[in-house]
Image (cartoon, rainbow, N blue to C red):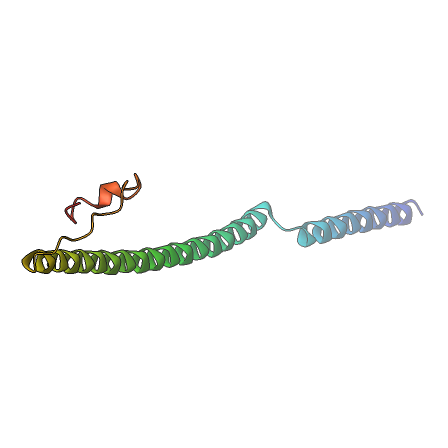
Length: 122
C-alpha cells in the first residue's frame, strides 16, 4: 500500500509539472518576442518615412515647375519691355527727324519703377 501511495504521489507530481509546463509553453508561444515587435515598429516607421519622402519629393517637383514657369514668364516680359522701349526710341527718333518734339515722360517716375528704367534709358 505504501508503494502504491508513493506511485500515486509520483504520478500526481509528474502530472502537476506537466500541466505547469504546458501552461508556460502556451503563454510563451502566444507572446510575441520583443525583437519581432521592434521589427514591426521599424517597418511601420520606415513605411511612414517613405511616404513622407515621396510627398516631399512631389512638392519639390511642383515648386521647381512653378519656378521654371515663372522664369519663363519673366523672360518673356523682359523681352516685351525691351521691344517696347526700342519701339518708343524709334518713334522719338522719327518725331525728331520730322522736326516734332515728343511729349515729355510723365513725372514723377514712381520709386518702384526707377530701378528697372536704367535699361530703357530713362
